[in-house]
Amino acid sequence: MDIISQAISSLRVGRGTVRRFRQSGLWGVRYSGLTGSGFHVVLQGSGWLITADAAPVEVRPGDVVLITSGADHGLSHAPCPLRGLPQFTVALDQTASGPADFEFLCGAYRLDHGRVHPYLGALPDLLVVSPDFERFPALRSVVGLLDDTSHVRAGGEVAQSAVLDLILVHVLRQWMEDEGGEDRPALTDPGVTAALRAIHDDPQTRWTVSQLSETAGMSRTAFTKRFTSVVGKPPMTYLRHWRLGCAARRLRETDASLAAIARQVGYSTEFAFAGAFRREYGVAPGRFRRDAKAPRLKPTGT
Image (tube, rainbow, N blue to C red; front, side):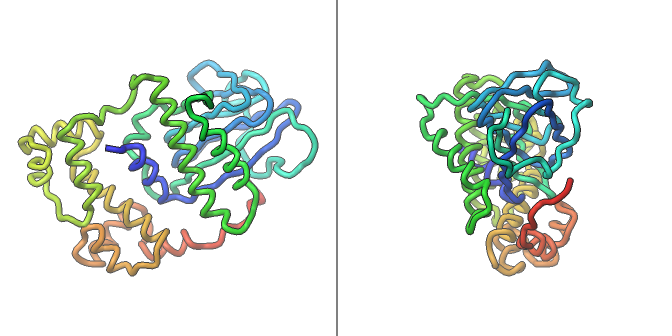
């Protein structure tokens, strides 16, 4: 099954952003507190990726730093302790003309409500990929499109989400090929794959553990144990998260009524759906929709 597509589509619950930054001199910045997934693309100059527990890694033009599930990290002109870097602010220079020592793009899906997909959570916290444009020529064009969407233009929010998806797909593809499958989440079990496909394709079905174990061709006990080991959570917990993630995307992307969305994701009543959604995301579905569709203000502070 195409687990990368499923994982990236789950990020659309959050709002995607792309910005371009320029730094010169003795610069450095720390990123912390991100709930979601994001990346940095180095456009010009060289710098260092700083983490709390590993040695600094030099990054050069073209390199992509993928933050799979919001791990704290920093970028700096030279190796240094992470705690010594100032916290990121959106007041970083984005408009100054003339040459800069270091230019990079920041892109992210911020999940103000919800959780990162188990596939992304099972990957290493930070991946550094040096794009191979011979094997993946489309990635060069995607980076160019990403840079274009960093400018405020009509239709920019829709374009940003599309290009964010593309760069995540291409970077993960190359990383997986380069690693030869090592350290990849083990989602190749045929029984678990069959159950996941059933959940993903038909979230409106009132699945039970017995039905899913039959789909997987396993006993109920063996299936529950195997599914939990491979996916990282029990079948019914995963089913609930998937259903509510689908609902959140529909709230953000469509004007369907709450009752219609409730039926589409397997809830018999709007009341039951609203209660489950509030427990998962911390806000009522109507509030989530209003927040998601609120106009995005130009950032001016921290």
